[in-house]
Length: 357
Image (tube, rainbow, N blue to C red):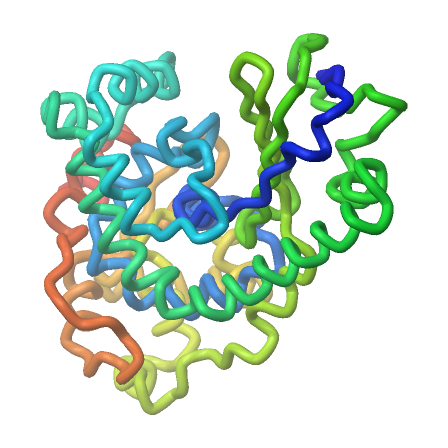
């Protein structure tokens, strides 16, 4: 249990803020999650066709599937009007030393993919390299949906302001998150994996997030602390977001819509179970499609622990890349993923790419 002894004037110093960069870090974690929340699966299906246009391997080095992400992806909030451009300028100018130390820490004791070494080798340029990769990711994965996301975030902030004005600190925090409770002047955060600790709290910042659901993130320094929490009404963000129409998928007309959907998802390694959840199909059905795609040279598979992972081949990537882009897809050159795909797969699995095909 983490406790904050709140000063009498803390209510007057509560800041309500937004952080576009938090949405980047949290959404990257969803891409490789074995159980992505159902509320975000429509978004995952929507963006999968465009993920091969960005330097995704570099981004996943900063936000690995397991363990904590880089701290720079969850920076102190700048304010309610913060933009991703402001945050990326700040990130690009961050001293490389602490970033690379953090990178080494989060990958300690695990096999490092080549993308981690790319950041380490970049030295002083590592923060700028990361900011450039995030720019590409933002353009295809978040910017097209930012208006609808921001509307829900602003609605949450308005709700918090109203609660604070009408009922004070208790009303502001009582429904913030199940891990948060208030007992008099003591704010308690139930984090069983953290050691018990008590701090003084004189300034509090609240930051709602779309992709963080259902997690609560705590950051504190001296007597200030920041809580990033799931925004109210996250389900409304995607409720009228249609899947890409079939006319935008000529590959589906050639090999079948289900197999095309599988190939679009396999820009990152996924298991049969993960694919089944994302596509809302049975594992048996997905397994049959994967067998056909593997026999056709469109996917490769390898064992990772107790799971069999699949990823599409360069042949499948070229077929997808040759399709006509949907009209709502962002244009412009973005760093390709294919140049490092085989290298990362080798580092992660220990199996040479030629043995994976």
